[in-house]
Image (cartoon, rainbow, N blue to C red; front, top):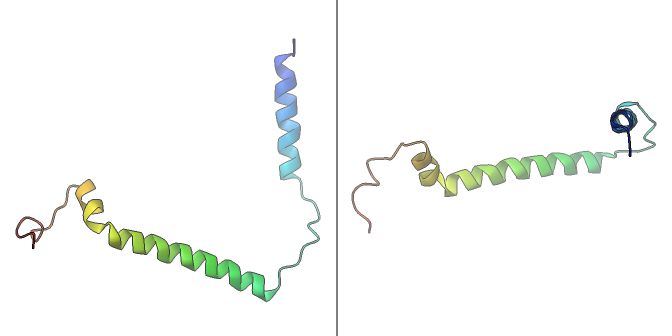
Length: 74
């Protein structure tokens, strides 16, 4: 049977591996930086587009319905 404190020690050592600094030996060129910025902007625009598409459902969740929705369904 494995002692309970052995699990805690293993967890502590594993967490130290992620916390302690190590050399990365990596290089980010300007193309990589612009690609990262492009991914972030695309994600923001995607969220904004989804909010626009589902705006009526989002407002219904919070209990706000517009007066235009109650009338005609043409």
